[in-house]
Amino acid sequence: MERLKIDILPHLLHFKQPAGTSRGVYTTRKVWYLRMTKTESEALCTDMELPSCAYDTTQAGWGECAPLPKLSCDDVPDYEQILHQACRLTETNGTIPYEFLRPYPSILFGLETAMQNLRSGGNWQLFDSPFYRGEEGIPTNGLIWMGSFEEMYARIEEKMRAGFRCIKLKIGAIDFDRELSLLSFIRQHFTPEQIELRVDANGAFTPEEAPAKLERLAAFHLHSIEQPIRAGQWQEMARLCVSSPLPIALDEELIGINDTESKCRMLDTIRPQYIILKPSLHGSLCGAEEWIRLARERGIGSWVTSALESNIGLNAIAQWCATLHPVMPQGLGTGLLFTDNVESPLSMEGERLWFRKK
Image (cartoon, rainbow, N blue to C red):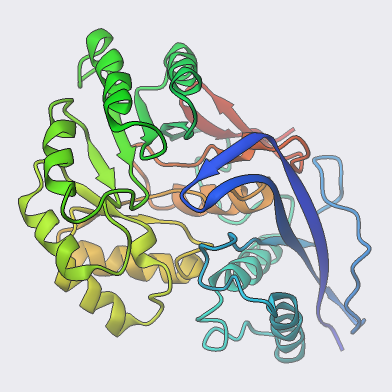
């Protein structure tokens, strides 16, 4: 009898340069790739080859499970044990155990995208769209990682030369006045109509200092600021969203909120201007779609971004994002960060991400 077979492939990715985040500096990234096929075999194995453009993926679906250390709600000591259990349940029942995996969004993301890839015939396809057919690219923001003033300055110039019309800076790592100098440099050369600026504070401000800092940031006509104060301070964040001269977007705030009632309660309490969806952090594709629907019902905007996935996860996010017909820039360029990324048809051309089948 034909049944699902899931192979689990642990893999260690290496960053081209240290990636500074709100949870420290990453030099490597542990991921677990899933290879889903239809077979009569029952055993899981962990010695498969990783896919590439030359690899025959026609009858296999690929997924990526990659929790972020100290950030993902499913960054737990027994992660591999839960992953194996989820794969066995999926093999046995032929369906993904969604309720069981609600607290484990990165595992759900790997299984959901692998199954969608398998259903679509493999070959990197998850959804048929103008993006998958190479007819349209997805607009993205140019991400400027945390670093020294000189490093961030050089990265800003590089992104502007590459043609990005939306630049996102991670702030909170260096002196605030020097970060304002970086924003001033951009505004001296480009108007808000020419370059859209976003900043991500990753919760770096205290509730007491945030209002004054938001006022100073507003002078540079920013599109939005992500997570000005740390997550979990709903009342303080709600007050900021009402009084801020800048639109506020939430991302870390969504982590660990996995049931519909809690999502509604958070959105109704804080009332942000935007939410940012990272499927491997925020409930996989199904959970992210629910977030978008609930936000839209409340007049809250959204966009999609990745969370340091390799090209397998990034391909899945990009193809799903394309089905939402995005107009504003999305955050989907992180696949270029690794020295040993999986080769894929994804290609950054200027500010747009493209799917280029070979």
